[in-house]
Image (cartoon, rainbow, N blue to C red; front, top):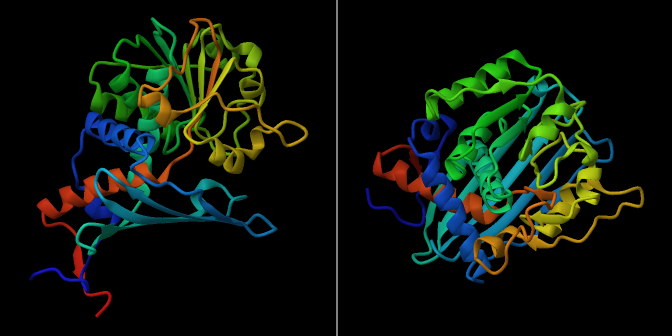
Length: 329
């Protein structure tokens, strides 16, 4: 039937799981979203956060507009049981897209797969822009959702990487990381490390993706000259930020909201030298000297969710996936 303003395509977790998209396509989509934002054609307001005093849950709401795709979207995220093990937590995230040319809804979808792809893609872009010349060794800390695709995305933007190191403690997670690496880059293997401090000292690029209960906390003195330390979740000590030669963030405002565990004793942060959209636009270089130790903070910007979500909606529509519902009828 013809779509009108009463019809919405709902895309479930299983609908999106069946869509095939290359890592390079994800990286290109995310990079375009950042470039469009840097050009002033997109809007990415600061996220709204709600958290009860007892810390049992956290909720986010994010509104944005992608100027290249001319799409407006709202993303919501709700996690309950922050003090519980991961398997006992409840997490729901959705993305609702509207076509800003026709004024019609595009789709509402589960946003979990989008986040699981967008975040490591951003880390890979940060690594590409911040890595010292000739970087050959990457270390990933953590084997959860964000850790499992970190290495394949790093190899997508930095194909010259030779050593791939992994620090993890959960056997199932380690197996999942190995499986994803083999699926995307057959023949490549990783080294499982037990001495994190030593591994950090050997790595040119560190991507910390661990959960909040991790005991891993790489200190600044462990980093080699020229190292790039990228924080996605946990696994880096605050010293890696406060003693960095350069600080790059996807968004300085969001780092100050979501990165409070990295603040100093007075709750302060060092100034951010550059934000990633400006780097990707070519306005300035992330690294200005080979020996600089760079700290990079990866917090999601909703414009990247919008771009990738719209890409998924296009693929789903082409394959007839999803459920059409007359939500407003």
